[in-house]
Image (cartoon, rainbow, N blue to C red; front, side, top):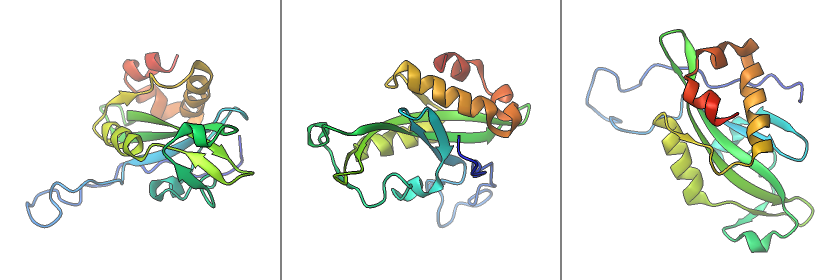
Length: 166
């Protein structure tokens, strides 16, 4: 894994807490972090730029909604991971994985924007969407999450998430 020490966006206060005024019901991205899983290299890392489709792997890539347009694409997963405060401390609360194919040489890529939005929304709501990932990708993601922050967040996380990434 790379030596970058970018961390998760960890548990901020609700900006609309206590009032029903402007912004109530707005989606807050403060507790979600994008994890990029590089399947070929067996690595995962947090890349906050992905919140705005500006991760290191997405820059200078023209995306299409058709996989056929990227026949030589390298598989990546953009995984939305939500961290919330649980009974024992911070825990992974929601996980939503989205497939991306990127051909850096031709500067072309595939991703489904509706899938990215829907899976981020599900992760924010504490749901789990990883059934679409292959086993190798799940192992890379699980190892990253287990080892992040000396494993504290993983130890606090509900068993359902542990099981789904085994």
